[in-house]
Image (cartoon, rainbow, N blue to C red):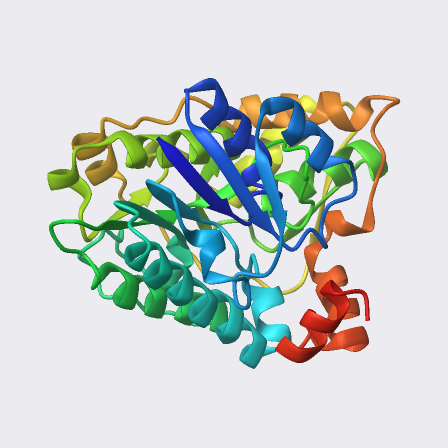
Length: 340
């Protein structure tokens, strides 16, 4: 199967793309490449992956042609980043991904997977499942809800779109993120011996290791059409609906000398998610627990080879991009691409 991965040089993509190759997929990546800090193109070239440095909003429609499936990861990646410039967030996370889905269908792809988020549920007392009415509280979540609605509407006998609503990511990737909860806790514990946690830590979050995110996407590519066409799947594990204070305690146990540093007022935002559907229909189960992720990242952060890069804090990079170029208009983007 020939698969196009948009945003394939990012946090998820750097795990997913090698996994796809190992599983026999023929992979092409489209990515703007402004959040990479190593020679990802050389790595992908060694894997036999074709890379295209381009923007999903403006790329030639021919670049979406000739694929059996499209995995759409290209998006601003979290709530704070999405709130920086709501217009650009809608432009990329909604209009860009709607464009990709429609081009994929027009150009003959038979399957399309869009990466969405459990943040679409907002914060609530009851456990949310796929039938729960979304309550998006941020621009990022609103754009996810809209792209799910419009891209899943494209389902027909020839085209099979599905959405994966991922739990909160954690774990090591070659394009590492230090702006997500567990990763940040471990990094701070290793480097400062402080685990920063908003009071009082009683809030629940659902989590999923980035390797399991890759596994869920592959299951979505391989699953029978009848099970997935036009469907939404929460992607995570019921066992990883955990309180943040319990995560912090696990980090504290794993990192000698680390202590919890409380800040702010008690955070009443809390939500849990039911992942029974993906387990039942796609036979997906998470393989990596929170302790695995903590130990994995502790080794990496303690290694002499580890180097901090500003791009690991996505928000700071987006701020600079907005200040410098406003995320590039179509005209400016084409000029830069042509070297003008």
